[in-house]
Image (cartoon, rainbow, N blue to C red; front, top):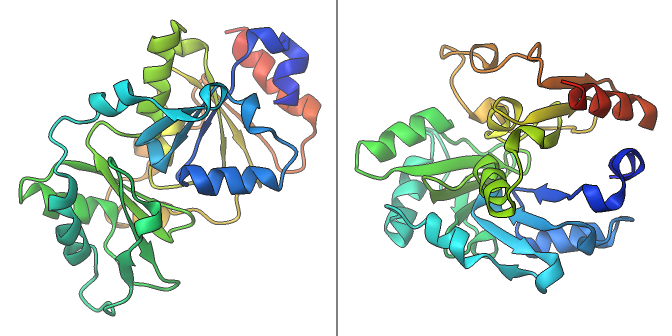
Length: 250
């Protein structure tokens, strides 16, 4: 944020926070940092199932929620996910309901450390065979499973905001770590620009995305893309500034 302000001026840059955490968890995390919640124009929580505006008393965007309503089974899918997410040799409490992580467009489950659960590709297939089309994301270092409407995602929330605000999506820059949630690949590739900050994330959830026999990340997106820059671990502000500037010159 400091780099963007220094390079472009505060009035020309807006910040959006995309997180798999709930709004309350996000507020609690920011209390222990030097970042004020009002420095963000918008916050997308629960892996893209909700959008809030700090400058408007953190009210939820009901238009965005209405956009997600299409074919959302809601509570009808809750028990089905709990049943199919468990691996064949899992314990009864490997995955349980997480009521504190739920909202009207997100059903959340807590996964105990070492709990055995199915990967995203397997779970998605089982749900589709029964007529449930949902977006499914493991987040919080694999300790949480979120089930949302098909069109709910962090990258979709960013696209929605770019249209709402009249911003060219190709001008946006997404900052990610070198690991992430199972929707990580969506944040890497696309019309937007991406800066990967190596060494900023200790543990991700990607191992729960697909089986080893399936296609690899390199088959989906490559870090050699002209819209992606990688900033190595231990780099300074000037290195991030160079990465931002190189994307701006494209």
